[in-house]
Image (cartoon, rainbow, N blue to C red; front, side):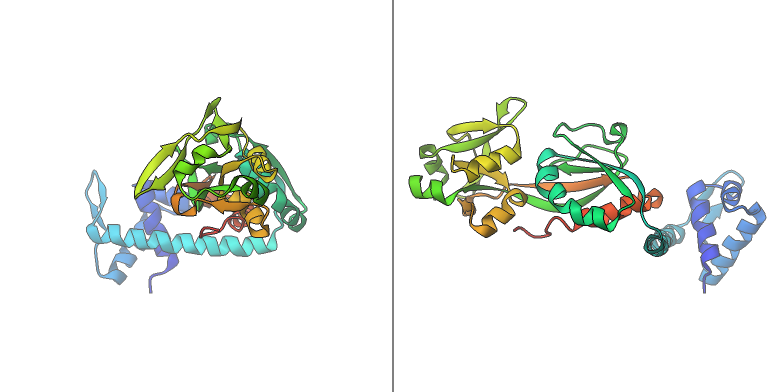
Length: 297
């Protein structure tokens, strides 16, 4: 049976590209590391490295075995971290950055149970819609809505948020319920602005995607305010499903044009590589993953 010490030595040599550097990381001699690799090759009955005086390269078998070993060591590390988290109470300051609408309508309502569970943890929550360099921003965790830019951080997809059209029952009683995108021209619509410009609605009509700029009685640059305007009966709003899930369930808002609304945006959480995460970051990642459904509302 291949000992974990031999496997760890093998993976470290691959990472360092050199027996001497790997030995230094493992606090061993280079000859001890070489013996571990030799024992592993003997047990496996295959060569893992092609060795010359100038270079050290993985064989094809070695590349395949390395990929499997990485998964094994990652799972082992996660198991150890899980046990550590159960013994150590997360503490210190956790800095989280999120879009305003996610912070206002999803994170903040759920924070009482999170903070009650981890009383030694202090949360610094920054809400902004401007996309900043996540590394330069200084936060430990970033939530992103929409397309991601290149980053050295790990991105975990939480859900696909669907954009939908909805209005209050009071508005629909007064103005009627549209059944096709063309009928929006006869309705008061509530538009979202970005950088001072109204964003179009992307709807599906006859199997094709159609970009519309509905006649808007109100434009606003904040999703929470747009939802509030719809609740007040001011018109039909174009909102993300996670923003209005409770309102739809209670009947305070009604979805319209459902067969024509197919546009989605991914929600991701960004964080440093798992290997270096403190427990306060891990528990927050576990928490935020419970706040979004895997399937549409």
